[in-house]
Image (cartoon, rainbow, N blue to C red; front, side, top):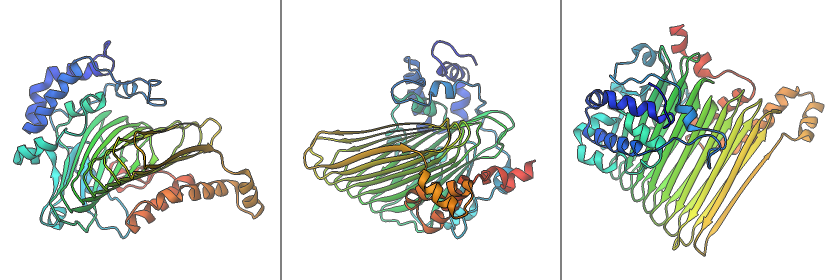
Length: 458
């Protein structure tokens, strides 16, 4: 593959032209293939991935991220069974219905299938598309816009994914979990897709964990998530990332909420190389509510970039955003958030907060909160602040015999605590608190240092 004037996209367009029959045939799902053809037409019309420095891309460039010649599992060859069998995601006291995705191939165990209540589908997107093509065509690709080149590229290359469908009135009491593993013998791009449809009055909690298994190899994870919340539906979605410095991640989450629905999303980027997370939430029905929260603990030369866009289109909706970054060494972070209030969206209650700590001499943070309001009778606020650890607090703790490194870690842990408190259930919150404390105290990522799969392979 070679890159031309179209930038990084050129190599993928050339790849699809040469292997279209193979990709479509290996997928075997008409709804996915139909969207793939639409994505190819959109990309071939002259799209380019944004470069670093373009509007909205102060610290990340998608053209740069997708430029390397990563391998792709076009023929859908099965990944190593040992990796999935050996992996253990250790969240004490938290029993989940577990699915493991090795690179971009989902695997659901028989135990998980037996634990799912009636009215819940949690499994392969391609398989569901073959079984229920009309339903899949209705939802797949309807929220994630092909006008965004990274979404169109994901749609072009995605051959499978995960679908969660919860029928009307069904309340899934046991949390669901997807563990996304990156493991290959050569540099690889994993193309992931997640489709969530919560029918009226349904409830569920989903935990997604991203882990790099082989930390000495380069990976790129391209992920697109679409979420539909029907009337009075409730979804809690939490994302934990522990990736290696050689891993890049481009993730887009697109959500649409009907009347009375409730969406809670939390993201914890504990370790990463280059990560970009985009969230677009549309509050379309009266009385819908959204809570977005996230924390980032940087290291080395990592780059963590978060963008949010919350659109209030109906009356009496509420949204809360809380994001915090701690950036040591030469790490870089960015947060750009926008709250849009449409004409007629009276009674809107929206808040957006971003707080950041620069804990290294070469750390940098870019923030740009925005409000766009076209309606009266609205309560909206936004704020952003970037600073350093309090020298007075450090001095106070040092005077009481606490070593400087420990004192700094304790202050940063306290700084992150209100974001940790937004996660639930209690077992997940306690586990995240432990991971944050270990991370800020200088510990290694458990997915690479302590994971049984890693020791088995080495």
